[in-house]
Length: 433
Image (cartoon, rainbow, N blue to C red; front, top):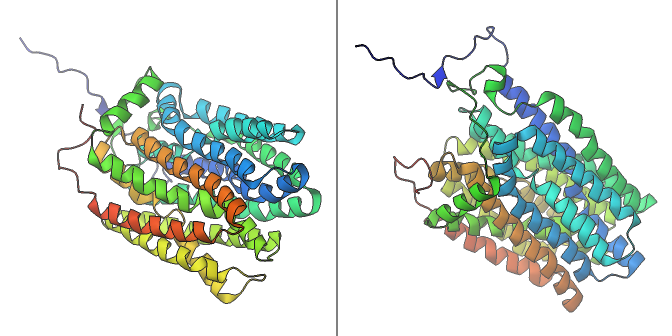
């Protein structure tokens, strides 16, 4: 008796016209626009410190605490958001996240107490932005691409810098000439404007349009994965039993401390302490955004060709050296050595993301997006600590110098940690149960 073979879950991809651009690139383009629109909220915290201090007489430590809550929730929400995307789909999760960001930013316009800043900007915007974190980019890349993953990861990571480039000069001008409230409203409108693009143009999986991933073979769309929170925690507990997870989490915590927590939050007030106008300091951060795009895309290209751990070691070492020189460069006006620092730091800003995602993919396979979500959580916890401690240090010592030196030392430690990460065994494709 002849047995019938079980139905296969793979088949040839739907035929496409010769020369037609693969739909995966459209998904990447929508994700790019989405991250740009959501990046407006990331441009504002560093611009709020001085205006809120002047209007409400809140200490920089108090304002830094609200920013630290935002950064911490941004990271801690990411792994659960990745699991929720497996359960409810990318479109629903991202559209809801953008709406929450818009509501939280708009609510700050009417706040009168510091606890409201913590609630609106810290909690609501933090939760919404966490669902728009880099785990979103990792999920889109993993689903839609088999080839060119490093390059696409670099492009989507650079989208955040592009958003900073677009919004930071505008927001700084609004804060300077019209106050911080119009800037908060602008952030809210930017987040809402992206929702239609996500809902109408983004699809959750290539199978939704009858296609294979770019460079791969067709697979049916997987069934929704129930128990998103339980799965996110289960992946964490399994990954936490492996050494690479702690090394990746530790290096990425230092990455967050030295970028979002320190430079993005405290560079503008630190430059202002030395007499530089706020608009000029914000313009320098925007220039970081320009070169961040170039550096991150280049890093994605390098990640497809070189050992990710070696790239990480180089990136962190160079970043640490540059931070040690920064206190000597701050001045009332922009001068060539400061421009060199900005260009150099911009190229390195989030160049660490593509090799970090690649290492998560190498070690944890299908769980890599959720694992990276937890690694990103450590990034944001590091950022949150430095956003808070940096404000306290400024209040206590009247200067940010000690913070810059400490961050440089941490980056040297991250470079050593990256070199310790070993290549996975050839058969390892997922977190061991």
